[in-house]
Image (cartoon, rainbow, N blue to C red; front, side, top):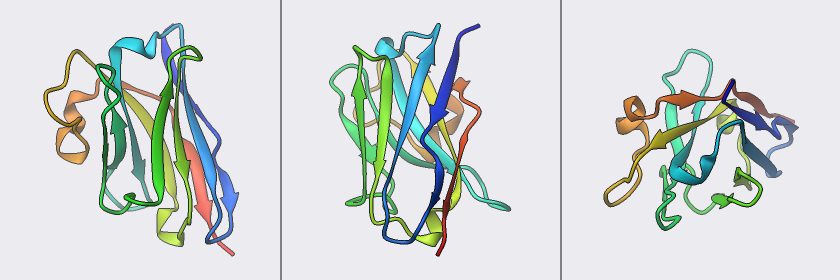
Length: 129
């Protein structure tokens, strides 16, 4: 069964780093825009970053700019989210999601969440001392 599989979450101290991975299992990510979303307890799911398949252009939420970096390795069928300078408010379950077809201009985040039809199960990120 095709699916997205996230990994790399864990417990990290404030200021630390983590790298999340989103791998396709029987799911070729090559033709998909991939995004990372997160959801903290009691809050709405929000977009963090995305990367297109056409030209690997990227988009970041304001909260992620300058600290998080998204990349894709199509040979490994994996998208990565490098998260640096982590803060307690980054604590959430992080999900990767896939959107098929070309994306005009920038890839969508929170406003376009309904366009992402494929979702992983999520990986927990906890930032705490």
